[in-house]
Image 1 (cartoon, rainbow, N blue to C red):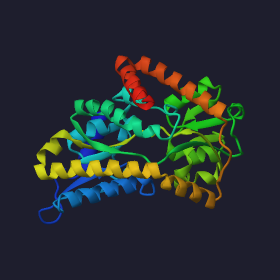
Image 2 (image 1 turned 60 degrees about the horizontal axis):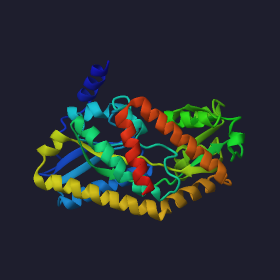
Image 3 (image 1 turned 45 degrees about the horizontal axis):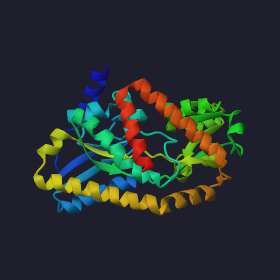
Image 4 (image 1 turned 45 degrees about the vertical axis):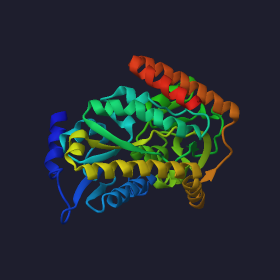
Length: 335
């Protein structure tokens, strides 16, 4: 079946060594994120910087919202095949092929928003050798702008005690394990199914970032959001197959490297300013959502303790490499 999936993708796409008009070369870039998400803006920024650094000789053509028909869990297999030139990736999506990536960095890993900036370089040090094993070069990372994870419910809920009587949507297994330690029932529901799950009562609440809640109309079905913990944002990786990268001219390689460096610097600055976070929260309020009082300091500490315990257990379950990754990232956070 995996072979058939890959063959279908290869057949659907034209040659990866396509070129734009004239002598300019064009690289096609897959992105699962829709254009309303900040990540899409950052991909656009990266593309603009590539064009500038290359003097227009190299162009990046992003395909947002998975419009090429590529599935992120297959990226490690698809990118080296040449089915597409480049991809941006939330690395946890490839946990099927690389389980350690799913627990390299988890929600609850940080206690202060600013610790996110310390975590990302250490996370990249973990990711890069893994991608390298698959014949994929990591050009750099995009810092996600979302700073806080909220619990959105149909009615106001901002205590762990009250959350125990609710069914909560989460996006990853680690969150399931964390909430289980707090006697809260949580289940993984994809973002694409979250709205209907809340609307029909499959779940009562959902974990999500308030700053981008309007992109999925969350305020329509769960209007009350309570801040619970800083968002441990897994950096979005900018990837290209090693073979494709090495086939480029030295000038094009340099343009990609410089553009990736610019993009991380730019997104770090945006993260620190918090302007996108504030604008997203205001948009949520303008569209009928409400940010209520945050979970208490005691509840936040309880969540972090449970999250780190689950992080330890899941890393040990995967093996020594995952434990080593966890230790190195925790050390970076705490420095």
